[in-house]
Amino acid sequence: MKSQTKNRPPGRRPPREAAGPPRLFIYGRHAAAAALANPARKIRALWATKNAADWLAGRALPAARLAALREARPDDIDRLLPEGAVHQGIALEVEDLPRARLKEVCDPADGRPVVVLDQIADPQNIGAIFRSAAAFGAAAIVVQDRRTPPLAGALAKAAAGALERVPCVRAVNIARALEALKERGYHCAGLAGEAETPVAAIPADAPAALVLGAEGAGLRRLVAETCDRLYRIPIAPAAESLNVSVAAAVCLYELTRRRSTA
Image (cartoon, rainbow, N blue to C red):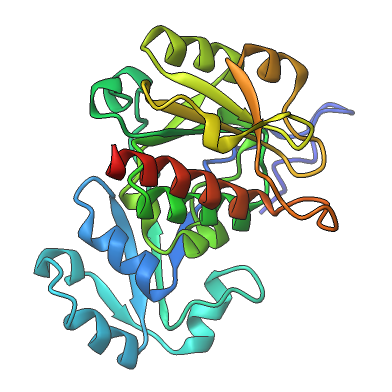
């Protein structure tokens, strides 16, 4: 049979197929169990080792969610995931969660804080911030749409299930998202090492939107200018700074402590 490409005009290449969306995986026992328990999360496939499948069976998950489980060896799961992924014998292929809308999930009447991330790109840090946000009852996390890694993989593993519990708003423009939060009555508190005001002085008479910038670069100028005020965490002079996920946890604890004692 003759090749179909021999008579192609010089310089012409066959059309390339459009690349589909990247496959999203969630792995690790707590992240996987939380995804399976979340009815809003669509599951495409589930692989688990015998021990991990027995662990899932004891988690009171809906039987329909476990019906597609495929038993696999650890090395089978290794081949599905990035090198070095610690999957604990479980991996899910999932679809992204439906997009949350700021006006629907950020209700100033409930007094809960909102966390806003300005160009933070490290998956481990973002996952850890989600975990702290869930622990301290944050209403939502706002991220920049195109600058944020997929909400899956190592990020989901670090979040330990919090991705399924804390709504994520993906904003095209962070400064505009802050303006929208201010219009709804939030006090936008930017965290900056050079600020003079301590986080303990964040006003208690309005819900707070805690704004965190990338490590090193910090908040971008326009984002910082859009905040109502910049605040700092008082730390020992010998310590230059805190990891951004640790800083988020400290501030969220302070905001939650004040709400519980008000």
